[in-house]
Amino acid sequence: MTKNMLIAGFGGQGILFSGKFLAYEGLLEDKSVSWLPSYGPEMRGGTANCSVIISDIPVGSPIVSNPDILMVMNMPSLDKYENAAVKGGQIFIDSALIDRKVTREDVEAYYIPATKLASDEGLTGLANMIMIGFVIKHTGIIPIENIERALAKVVPASKQHLIESNKKAIMLGYGYEG
Image 1: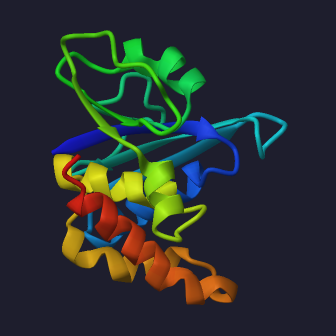
Image 2: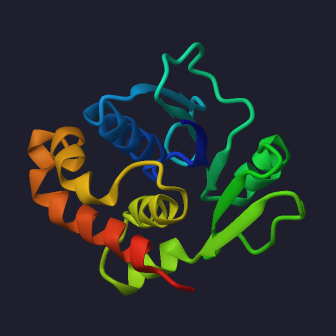
């Protein structure tokens, strides 16, 4: 099994953290992983994306040009990457920030109002992790049972108090039926 994922949005939305979390859990599962961040010079408010590969075999290149799984958190990212997803791929959209539907018919599109859910649940700033929970449910990219150990590794020591809210956000996305 090899999953090629691209996560994209604005800087400050936790795009890179989301990818790092998934890659770290893959590492803890003894998978071959790659996490390649990319962001514009503006960082916050600019564009950000990261390529994540989780595989049973060694990863040859860290670049994901044609993702099996595409997670987008802003309109420019959907516009830019929609056609890059592989035929039969999955596209996950934060429908609170993106008001259009996927135009392709050869992919599965999933919509979750992650930013609104985060606001409604007092999880401001964690729409990315709500999206990740939703992605986990529909792709099985990592096992949901082991999210705490990956969170403990990727959340910095100075922010360990945020582990529970991150877990709550992931579980909210995982349980979302929309």
